[in-house]
Length: 293
Image (cartoon, rainbow, N blue to C red):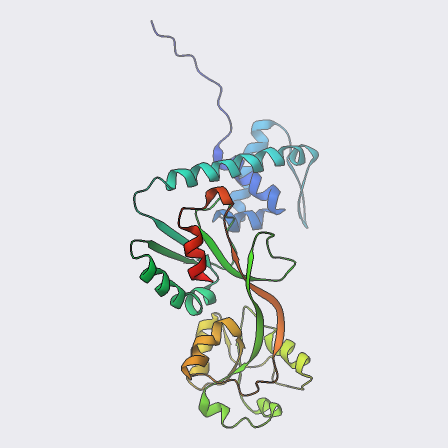
């Protein structure tokens, strides 16, 4: 007779993943964003892990959560384990017969900066299958199956291995018909200043850098996507604070103009390209990187 004894079971993988993300990111909300679930789901998974171990891993208080000593002791091994799982998943993916490229990018970058570069990629590598995911927060390339991530970041936020593509210079842009009525920077107080909700402080920052008084700096029409605000600027609805990389094509095409070319400010951010660890880079990585820059 075959003996099949009941073996002890470990905790669910999802519970361990929730703990690792919450511990590494210092909170359930940030972990939920990375994992694509709700903070409540992360909390439940962590509670299940704590019940399994019989030990609290987080201290909960009205301000958030803090790792206990036990949680802190566990974190390094959990990080290494899930990094290794990410590398193994990438190795599996590399076995696919069709070469794929997955790019994560800020929505404005995906819509306004990437298209010309993707055209270059398709012409140079016609067999390459390209996917782009627009997202507000950069993914963790040690875990997620993206080959590149392209975002804006301050020097303090920039990952150590990230490539800086260019600084983020900002300046007003508008349709030629609107520019014709702007003879002096002070004339901006008489037109609608279009606002992008992601970078709500753009106008105030530029105004301070330029030494101007603009009472309407924060009161113009607001848009949840920079590309929407850009289209409204092209349509003549007002003046938008242009981010150099995002408005370059419209300026080249003449659908937008920069009425005050001597008044340019530095936003303090940089356009960066993040790569996965060297061991996870595919055979065409350097070629693709060169075409993206």
